[in-house]
Amino acid sequence: MQRTLILLKPDAVQRHLVGEIIARFERKGLRLVALKLVQAGRALAEQHYAVHKGKPFYESLLSFLTSGPTVALVWEGREAVAVCRNLMGLTDGAKSPPGTIRGDFGISVQNNLVHGSDSPENAALEIALWFKNEELVTFAHADATWAG
Ligand code: DAT
Ligand code: MG
Image 1 (tube, rainbow, N blue to C red):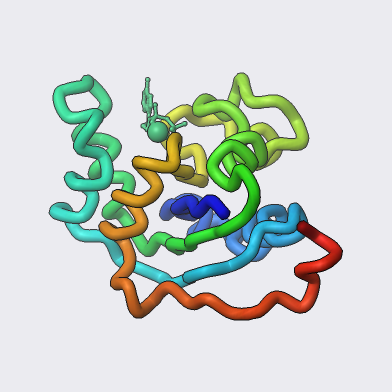
Image 2 (cartoon, helix red, strand yellow):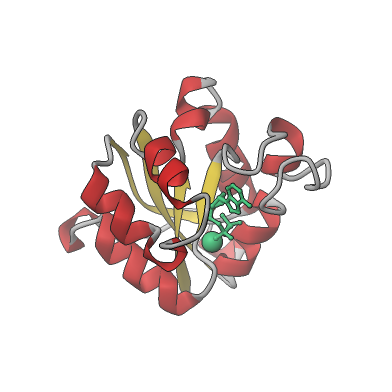
């Protein structure tokens, strides 16, 4: 069963979209493994976006991610990485189709509401960056025989 890290970035929190966005992942059939509200500092943001260091938007991206609280979640499920990326839509909200999170709620490239890991390998690294092992909770799901 795959796991992925999802962040509801500061724009999602400030715009009161936390419940709406979480509901989309939840209703899809993904299972919640961890959830918390985090005020990211510069060091955490730098590590999270290390792959983008040197790009023209890097400093602005770090300012954005540290500008307010972020909701961090771990979801688990079949093909969880791809399933979440599909629910999120494209990076640019203006190009992201209706029905996706970014397509329905965003028009910006930078302030695009959600982060989702782009591979199972990166998911493992990102989960370890945002959560302590004891914050990941495994439990029996009542819908296991129905939702798959
Ligand atoms: P994604 O979040 O869809 O995985 P990414 O990993 O390429 O996209 O980029 C990380 C974040 O950086 C993205 O969510 C928003 C920001 N970003 C990407 N390209 C940008 C650009 N051209 N201008 C401003 N911000 C950008
Ligand atoms: Mg990315």
